[in-house]
Image (cartoon, rainbow, N blue to C red; front, side, top):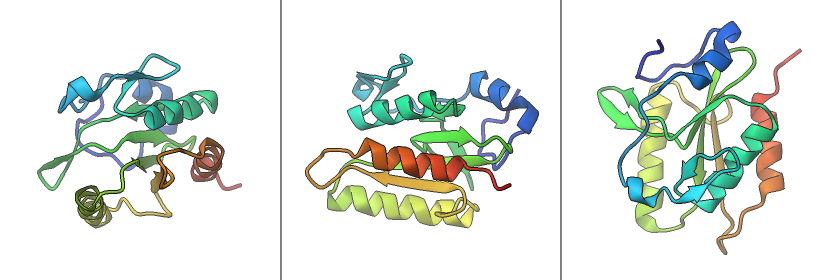
Length: 151
């Protein structure tokens, strides 16, 4: 079994075991999970459902909306994916552009940073455009870059 709190790596030999293992999924506002990904995962937004399709097409193992514990507090990154080397990548997709949403995102990223989850290392952040559309090709390139292993 895998711990229910945040992990920064998984045994590379067991990344697909990790992906298929039960995990603590965020149950808050479950009624808002109404967008179905290509693989049948219920998501909170159309963008997240499309992004999970990218993960699936790239065969990247992931957990969607997993609840993790950092310093005793609960957080739910949109996606936690596992690189081939076993390192986890935490992916936050920012779809709204409101003051309260931005404030919560900034707070979350400060907590993540203190826990070793840092942009450019193991935190991937992607965004909807200002008009609410999403550039899936750009997001695909960002995901591919985040999961590229060094030679």
